Amino acid sequence: MQIPKFLQPGQLAKLNNELISSTGCFGFLDVESYALSVLPENNADAFFRYSVALYCVYHDQGCQFLNFFLDPSNCPSTTLSYQTKFHFLHKKAVELTLRPAFTHGMVRNSVSNGFQSKMQNYFTQKHGATNFPGINQYLITLSDLDWKYATENLVKDADSFYDYLFQWAREFQHSNTSITELQVTFADSIYFQKSIDIRVCQSLYGNSSHPSDYIDWTQEKKLHLNSWQENIKRSFKSGNIKDNRVFCRLLVDIMASDLDKPKNSTACAKKYGFGIPM
Image 1 (cartoon, rainbow, N blue to C red):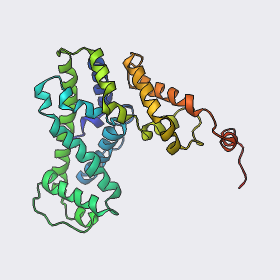
Image 2: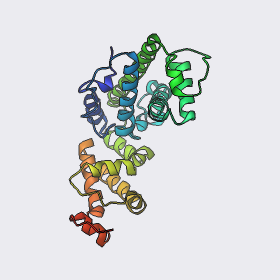
Image 3: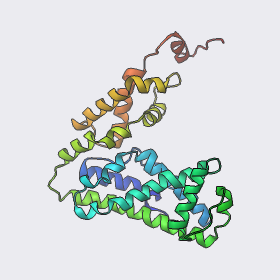
Image 4: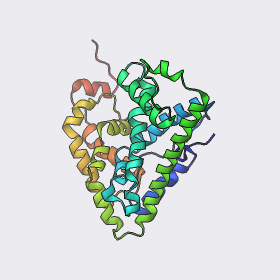
């Protein structure tokens, strides 16, 4: 059973390293832990596992950085710019239809209906099939051949997206734009800014050595997110960030300058291990 290149051992790191060496920009925050550790048992299992794993790659680690490379105005050639819509729609299907269906489809009819439509008209080619009231009722109508066809389509489009990003990096080497110029465009883009959201900040900081259990992230978003975005952008444009690992470490350091300060006596007590009786 074919596995998407994004999920094969070492392939995500290989792609990210190619983007960094060729363009000076990265596409993913973390590339070390997304190879499939358990092989699918059957075609339906493969479709489920690939959908969820690709979501983690595209959304959790690619953030909005990937959309920079899918913006036709940034492409190093017209050949690539003509391909952007196809790859964007694939990425959107994984992020907004497939993964949500497996996680929320049982309780949200809109998600279930969107999933059924996508499966009927794209993945399985069962055009005009009846819409079922819930995702479970629909799933049991799919045969192993349906799942095989759907999985093959998903892998084909994911691999095409992977190859597109690799080609983007290769073609940029022959463009008239310098790496420094592209880095400035990358850092100034809305995609760079939107990638540094509170979800990413909380995840990076929570996995660092800094204490984070007392932090009110809703409040910190209001107080500091804009300054964190500006500071990391300034560092990237100055050439201090060579890859995604340096980016993550520096962003944590930037946050620590604001967050390693207990905001009140209760937070201070909690930080140093003293519980406050209720």
